[in-house]
Image 1 (cartoon, rainbow, N blue to C red):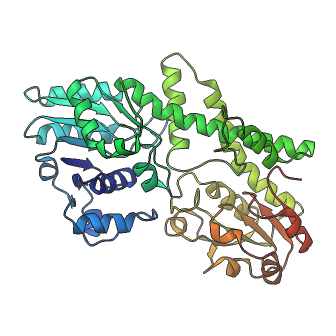
Image 2: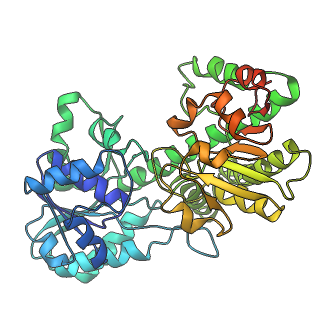
Image 3: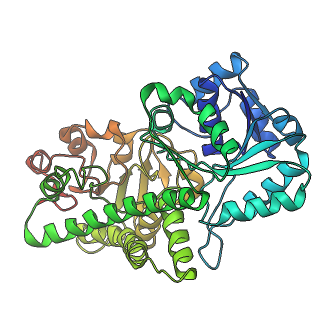
Length: 434
């Protein structure tokens, strides 16, 4: 089987490499020549554990190729996937679908025979129907089926999520499209992965509904953490007590500085706008968006309060700035709000992140970048942990004590043991724990 993937970004590259691993011939096409050249040379433009090895092996085996030539990419393909960006549109919060629509038209014009055009990008409900109209208008002479196949990839664990998914969702309105997608995902039948076939609109909405629900869950436990602090309770125990109920589950019940990344902020906003336009407001999602934005600002205020009400002239060490561990993604990361606020309040910031390539471009130029975690803490008056990279968990309190000049630690991910930190002489605070 041969497929083409339009877009060599995160979704396109991971999905393309994983399909190739299944034994499918995959050609990934992108208009950015420098990106394609880098991929041909074995340089991966994003950080995702295991992706470099997966790409290299499938390129070597001849199943994965890269090109800037769309016509070449889709020649002989049974399915063509749209994996282009859908960023938030300025001004109204809707997803910008211009890249999706342009790519769909270009594929239709370049197609030499029947194919299934599959939207992999996260798009609002109703997008598939519009794509179908565009394709029919561009090529009324050609049978091009349109389908939806939303991705459910977690950054940092994307390969595992693709190879061993909870489910595969396919939105179709023809037997031919369903047959092609089932054939493509046949390797997953061996591990009995549920394949849910729905209408196109339903598949599109499943993706948004799933992300919005998880965002609501994160925001809920963050608000419970605030309540725990007022009541003297422990949010870890509250989350455990909730999570043991199988109807709720334990995942995404980890209190912290708020959610970020490429999906939750963008998708919750797009869902809220779509729901408003269709006359069925998702008010719980609207409140989640507002609460999450406010929480990021509150984290900076928390640090300032822990430092005695002022950080003017103080050096603050920051560990972890990406929106989550095991990624270099800075999109909507809490650090993008917290660090500028601390800098504006007069603090000098020394930061360290294991994957700082995008962080250095995204954060203020005044931020000083350290070589490692302990280097960041040298002489610091306070330490703030924002992203829970595993390497931070094992840092001995005594080492931090020896390196730092002050004794304030704000653990925004509840990584360290409060008792051990306080025994070491730190003025330690975390989220929702006494």
